[in-house]
Length: 561
Image (cartoon, rainbow, N blue to C red; front, side, top):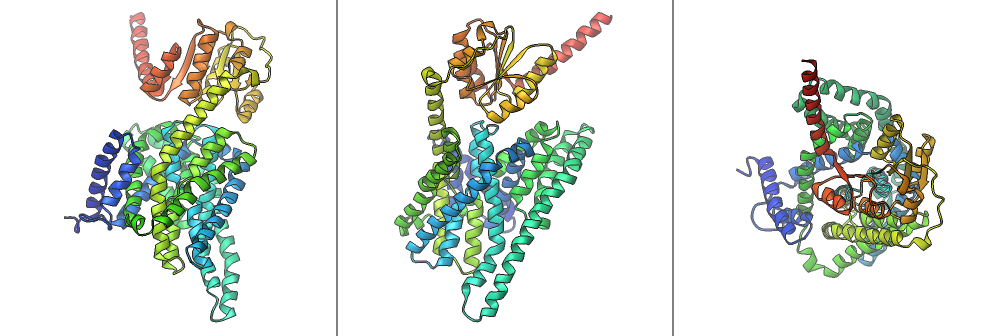
C-alpha cells in the first residue's frame, strides 16, 4: 500500500514511530524530541526497512512550522515586537555575521573554496524557529521579556535568510568568474535590484497585514464565532493560519513562518485570540512532531562514523561557540544574565533554514554533498542536546533568583509605601494589568510591583502606584507594606518565580490572602504548598464560572417565583 498511498503511509509511520520512541525516551528521562528524531532516522533512506516519502514529510513539517508560528503570534502584539527591536535586530545581524565568519573558517579548514565555506557558515549561523518556540512554550516563559527578545531575534534571522536564499544564485554566478567580465557585470547589476525587490516584497506584505489584515482577519473570525458552530470556527482558524502563510510565500516570497506569525499577531488584538489558540493547539502539536521526524529522515547516521572529527567540530561551533557568542552580544547590550542565558541556549542549535540553504548550495554546485551531511548531522545532534541546555539554563536562572532574593544586603534600600488596605499586584503583564484595572474600577487602592522597566513605565502612565523591583526579594515586599495590605495577587506566568514570591510573602504576613496563577495542576499544588490561599488555573476557573452562573440563574428564578 505504501507506493499507492505515500501520504497516508508517511503520516502513519511517522506518528506511530514518534509515539513509541518518544514514550520510550520520556520513560528514560530523555526529552521526547530525541525519540521523534530517531523515528525520522528509522523511516529515512539511510536505514533498512520502510522508507517514508521525504518530500511529503517535509511539506507536513512545514504545516507544523506554520501552526507553531501562528500560535506564537497569538501571544504577541506589534508593540511587543517593536519593544525588542533595539536588541533583536543588531544582535541577530551581528550574531549571523560572526557565526558565518567562524563557519567560513571551519569550511576552509575542511579544504573547501570560499563560496562553499561561506554557504556552510551561513547555514550554521541561524537557529531553528521550531526548537526555540517549543522550548519557550514548554517552560511557560513565552510571555517574558527574554522570550520576546528570543522570538524577535529569530524573526530577524528568518528575514536575513530570505534575503540570502534570493541572492545566493546571483552571488554564485558572480563568484564563478571565468568566461567573461560581461557576465560578472550582469550578475553585479542584478544583486542590487534583487535586494531591493525582496525588501519591497517583505515591506509590502507587512503593510498589507497591518492595513487590511488588521481589520479583515478579526472581522472574519468574529462573524464565524457568532454562528456558534465550533467546527466552523476551528476551520476558520486553520484557514487563516495556513492561507495567510501560503499567500505570503506565493505572492510576496515571504517564508511560511513569517507569514503565519503576522497572521497570529494580527489576530491577537481580538478577544477571540485565546479561543483561536486553543482550537489550533492539537494540530499544532501533531505537526510539530512531524517536523522533528522530517529532520531525522534527512540524516545519514554513518556520517558520524566516517567523519567523527568533522562532526565534532561542527557541533562545537553550533553549540558552545554560538551560545557564548550570543551571551556576549546580549551582555554587551547591557541586558541581565537571565536574558543572556536564554538567548545563548536558544541560539545553540540549527534547523529548517539551514536545511534549505544547504540544499540550495548543493543544487547550485557550490556546497559539496559532504557539507550538507555535516550540516544535517550538526542539526540533529544540536537539537537533541538543546532541551537539556534549556533545562540547565532555567535551573541556573532559578538559582540566581534565589540568591538574589536571599541576599538582602546587596539590594539598595527602598522606601516603604504609605498605602494600607491596598491590593498588591505582582506583574503588570496581560493578567496583572487586567486585574489591576478591575480592582481600581471597584475602588480598591492598587500597588504594582514590576521589575520590567517598560511594563513599570506603562503602569505609571496609567496612573498606578508602582514599586520597581523583583518581588521575590524580601526588601521589595517589605516596601510594599504587606503587613498593612489587604490582598496579594501574584500575576507573573513563571511558576518558580511566583513560588518564591508566595513563599516570601507568606513569611512576611502569615494572614495575608494570596491569590496566584498557574498553568497546570502541578503548578497549583506547588503554589498552594508554598502558601497561596487560592491558585487560579484558567480552564478550571472557566468551568467554575459557568457553574456559578447557572446557580445564579436558578437563584434568581427561585426568588422571582
